[in-house]
Structures are given as structure tokens and as C-alpha cells.
Length: 215
Image 1 (cartoon, helix red, strand yellow):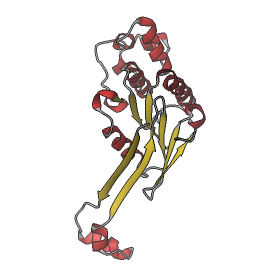
Image 2 (cartoon, one colour):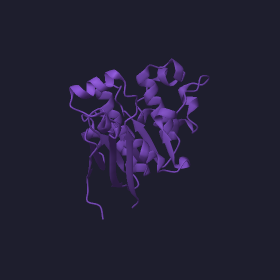
Image 3 (spheres, one colour):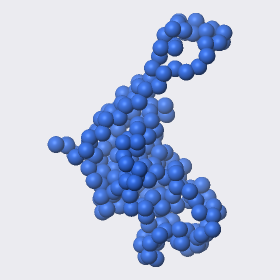
Image 4 (cartoon, one colour):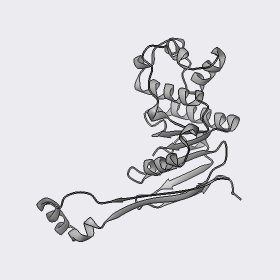
């Protein structure tokens, strides 16, 4: 069972202008303390095949930072990130999936794309929500060990987000694919049923919660 140690720090960057110095005085902060300030995010987690890892917490708590650090820890040939999947401009959705017809339809359906006219449309003509789901279908079809998705289902209506979360859970358990997801939405937790929940806090701390005890 691989263990991943994630850590990232950011030093304050900027120029101490007159306005910056004035704000520091207003809040009783010295400019030395400001320039020496460091924000750190860290956590350690164990991952099994088929696990769903879900980073959650308020905006600015470091969810995306930790997800990116974990992505760097995975060899490039073993991972795919939804945000980096390009949309083909000259094919219909069904022709974009490099698989046989039935398996291609299954991938699209798992991602919530099962309308005939949508399947026969071109990706660039889709709505933003449909484009997101198409990228998910492409990620599933890539057959990589790790799938990374920041702001997972954040731009979808919540019923669709719940359905896709349930489908992702079933896909992970059936194929052994590891999903690394991040979002501030907690309304999909029941359907997604993550194996590892990382609750990030604004302080930079992150609590790692396992569904089942790990040896």
C-alpha cells in the first residue's frame, strides 16, 4: 500500500509599498513579519487500487495545492487530469472514444452523456457542463491508473453531480482505477462514498479520514 507525503509552502511575494506598509500598521503587523510569512499545506495518506480520494474544505484551504502535489508524485504515463484533456474539433463524441461502439457508449453513459443528439454532436458545440462530462468520459476511456479532477462536478447541477458521483464510485470498484478529486461541495459524499476524505482547513492543516482502517 503506497504512502504519499504531500507538502507545499508559499512565501509571501510582493513589494512593500506605502499602501502595504499602511495596511500593516492598521493591523499591527510589521513588514518583517509580513515578508517572512510562509503558508504551508501538508498531509500524508495511503492509497489502494480502486480508492476514491476526495479533498474538500473551504476556498483557500489548499485542496488544489495538495491535489497537484499528489499528481506530481504519480508517473505521467499512469495519470490523466480532466483539465488537460483537449476537445477534438472535427469528430462527434462517439468517434472521440477510441473503443468499440458498446464500450464507447458505456463510457459516455457513465459520465452522464446518454442523449442521442448529444452523442452525435461535436465536443466544441456542447454546453460547459456537457464538456466537463465529456472530459470525464475521455478520462475513463484512457484506462489510466489515476484520474485527477479538481472542482469535481462543481459546475453541474446537483442531481447530475450526484448521479455521476455514484457512477464514478462503481467504476472505481469495478476497474481498480484510483480517483483523486477535489471540491468544496459535500452534498455528493453519500453517492461518491470516498475511501479517503481529506478535510483541508484554512490554517493549512488537513485531516485524513479513512473509510476503513489501514494496516
